[in-house]
Length: 216
Image (cartoon, rainbow, N blue to C red; front, side):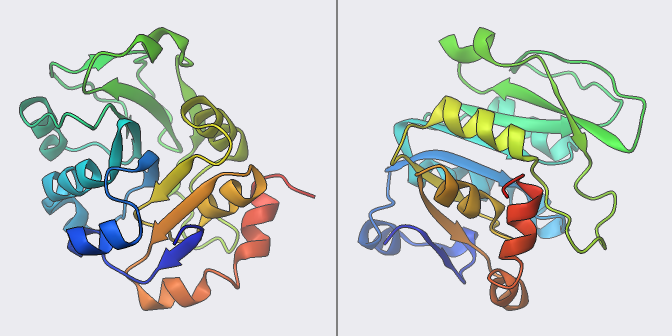
C-alpha cells in the first residue's frame, strides 16, 4: 500500500481509493514541487481540498511553486488540515493576510527563496530557518540530472515534520525524489504521477536522483 508511485492524477483520487490504500486522513507530510503547467494553477483549490483528504489532523503541507495572484485565494479558503504551505517567489511581495516568516526580496532571477507561509498559526513557526536559497528548479529544465529538491532541504523538512516510519506523499512525483529520500531515511511514502512517460522513466532516473541527493 505504501512505498509506491501510482500512475494516477492526484486531482482525480476518490475516497474509496484513499481508504483502500490507507491514505485517507493518514499522511504526515505532503511535500511537492508543483507541476509547471497551467492546469495546476487553474485547479489549485482542488489541489488543497485533495490534500485535506490525505493529511492527518497533525499533518503538514510544504508546497514549492512559483507564486501568482491565484494563490492569494488561500487567505479566503483556509482548510483545517492544511497547516503549512511553502511558497517560492521572485522579487515581488504581495499583500495578504497569511502569517509569514523570513521574507526577503530576491533580485537574482536564477534563484528563488523558499518561504514558509502558515495557513494556521503553529508553534513551529519560530523554529524554521528564515530562508532557503536553492537553484530554481525551472532554470535549466533540460539538464539530465536536474531535480527540484536539494538533499539538505529534504533532510531538514523531512526530519522536522516526520519521524521514522512516518508517511510522506508527493502528489507530483516526477523523478520520485521524495520517494528515494524516504527510502534512504526510513520513511514510508506514496507518490502520484499522471504522465505515463514520466511514470515509466522514474526507475531509469533513480541513480541520477541518488547522486543529486548526495548519496555515495
